[in-house]
Image (cartoon, rainbow, N blue to C red; front, side, top):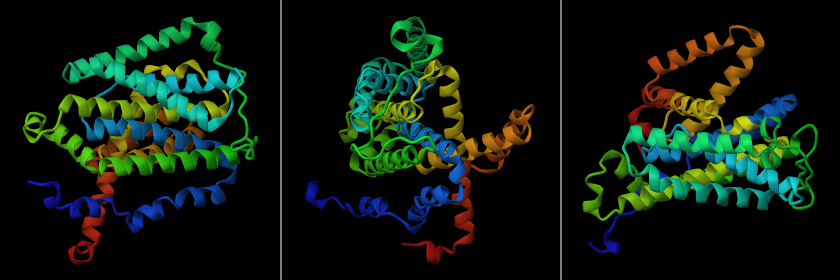
Length: 331
């Protein structure tokens, strides 16, 4: 079969933006005016959403389980933070170098991760994160150890937009980066490469017969996911101008996995929605009940998992399928 005879119409339809998606991306504009006193929280939600998006690429689409994804997030944070603390505070180049550093680590570790099955991959990813955590803890003359990396000074974006105390510049900077990274991820998963990744997750034994190099594709998506996590870590370092040791902690990786399961893996928007629901609930419940907020948060998570198949995103899809008539929903 020649390339010219392949019908690309399904891919083109899937790549087309829908009205609901444009409405979703109007939320950052709405949030800026509705919650002007909570821009720092909204910025952290956006950074966590990008971090969760990076895990969705390797877990939700490629099926690579990981309990050490914080390794790439932390490396990106320390890379951007060290650059800024040594006089290179230009934000965009800091993001690029952080993405490169995390991507290189992702490619190197992918050679180990892809050698085993799910349980082996869990142990390898966890081991990599634990090694980096201990290195950051011991190399205090570089990372600051438990005291954290300080002295980070960021220069204005494009030499014009300086980081302010209120967080307006950090907010829009983070939102723009999140949107561009999401747009690139969306193009990726709807491309032939993205379809091959989904095929490998669904039936890894059959894909070589179709001409797809399984290990090469998995290594590529793992590297891309690591680079995305590095950008998220760099954003955190640049907007807070501080890097704590917990950026490499196991708790951060475990919480990220929980957020992705809550939102629904394998949809990109599930990572976004899961982050919004989790962090908003965390903020509200901890203010209402500082002692027992974890109990109520756990109860909420159990209810969502029990009654919303495939997380929040799956619940919304089910509700939309019931509310919208099939004739209207059909393209």
